Length: 174
Length: 200
Image 1 (cartoon, rainbow over the protein chains, first blue to last red):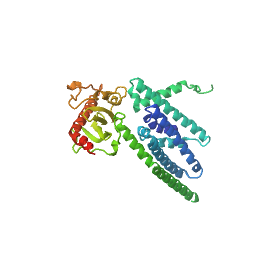
Image 2: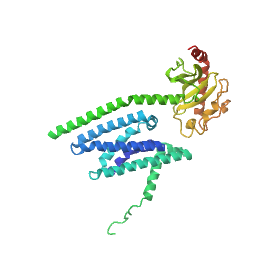
Image 3: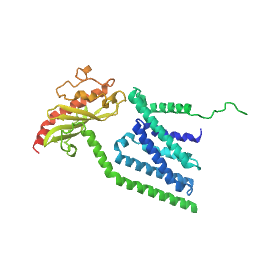
Image 4: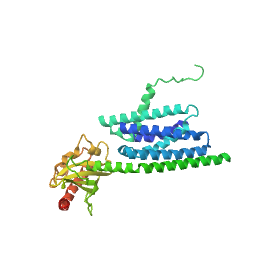
């Protein structure tokens, strides 16, 4: 069990708020905006405060960001806000996990790659769930368990297609 | 200790900034939120009326709700649409208990007691079964258009006139009962509502 298991905290919005392509794009954008703003606002505090104060400040900022985001969505995108429900608030956990896991060097580079991957997976999941629910009779795809199965299949496909390094199956000298 | 005090100071500053910005933002967006909610409610509830059949603001002056509950549904709201001062339609928002949760329907009834149309405002039925109630391709609610109170308001398997949704008998029966209740309620109140408007 390594600490990257914390990324499982991002599963709830990924599976719950991607029923259609529009919803997936919206939750992906919310995740990107919240992640970037969170890191931006915490950057001046990183080197200056002790770790306990840093965690508390991080929580306060996340609460403020999530509240402002939900209020803004209710004001200008009300149908979308109702469709997404409470999932934008759950993005806080994802931001906390990524803040804990990001390295000290090349932080923004890794953050950009991470948020890009989150946005891409939200879009892909939303598009495939909408296509499956509309064009085939697979209504499981529009529910959360079906989304989890679909996410597993998409990850398997990604691992298959990605040209990775071959893992040595024997120990000792190659 | 000096660092401890500075940490607490910075943390307090962050907290105060976070709370004050959030409260100010909430204040700033509350009129926009109120108008967006009103617009959405009006769009949902009045979408059932045909375009151009009314020229007033029905939501501004709602009609009084019934004192007693109907047998199978609950009338949440009633609105009167008028055209050039004469009443053209009544919109009733009714709620019935579906298979999973409440189904809220918006029903438009013409002045002669004919059901103009109905639309789903809210439903949580099972996807693929009862959720086809709101399917724009299936248009199941269209079979109730232009029906009257005197028709046989039941499913064909219950010796009525209407087809059910495939695999969703509970949902179908709930919707039919709610529509029948709405028409009965209109019949009870038609003298009050229609003559009352003509005198205004």
